[in-house]
Length: 122
Image (tube, rainbow, N blue to C red; front, side, top):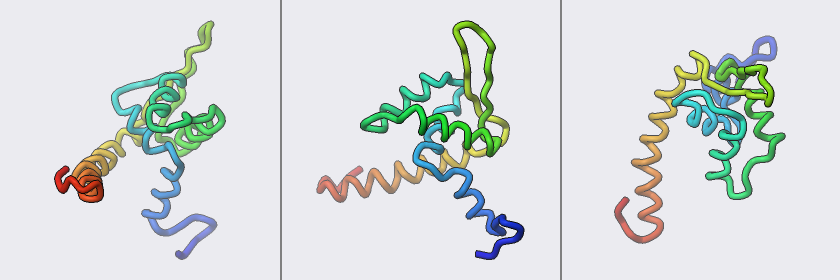
């Protein structure tokens, strides 16, 4: 891959770097319907991660998504503290891509699971 000034010329590689991480796509998907608080995001990820997600990992993923301008952190400056995360316009523009990934997964991964389990139908 050719690089100029430390950045990649390939947009697919740049996109992959932006969303790489164990939970980034899932966080974006969870935020599609509106802002969520830190605890709500942690709870949602706990449904897919057998041992949950550590606070450090979640914070790191959220900061990286913020640095990529995919989400914004809103501190309401209240007592007790209330912080919400929501998609930016850039993050919202990724939803059709993630929806296509979901559709592909429903079509191909469910069918593949059925074949592997021996039922033959999805």
